[in-house]
Amino acid sequence: MSDLLTANRRQAGLTALYLGIFAMVWFSVPAAEQPLRALLVAGSIIAVLTAVVGGVLSARLRGAATPRDRAADRPYLLIVIAEFAAAGLGAALMAAAGWSEYVPVLVCLVVGLHFFPLAPLLRDPLLRPLGVAMCLVAAAAFVTGLASGVSAGLVVGTGAGVLLLAYAVQALVRAYRPA
View 1 (cartoon, rainbow, N blue to C red):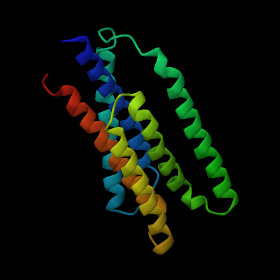
View 2: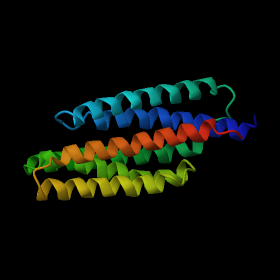
View 3: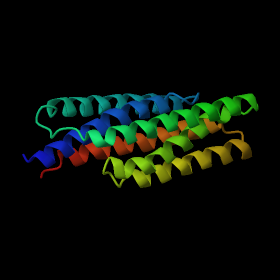
């Protein structure tokens, strides 16, 4: 197996690991009645299993992969710090304004936006459509929360969980696709 293919497979494993974990977290956001509650639990279990498979894949390829791109570490760290700062400050402001039920919507929007600068940095152009989809889920959750009795947290937790899980699974499919 070539070094580039090994590095790509390892990166796909890491993607599945991280996004699988975050999908599980998003599936745990909404409070739901049955039968949706059972589906959210099933989604969480599938997300954890996806994360485990991704973790195993990346661990198995650790020694064989090409060296890490240290030049990307600083911009990556800055993007993540900006994401956490925006989400944290926004959450505090929303809570102070009495809009705490919309904090998950804001977090989803910030997560979606952070995929745009990450796409070129991680050399993964598919992160852009994921970012667009996450932003659309946040918008749909906001509108639904305002215009109906459906909780914005239910919409955003379910939507973000499904999107991140689907992306994690497609990363594994790409990794295991024959060269």
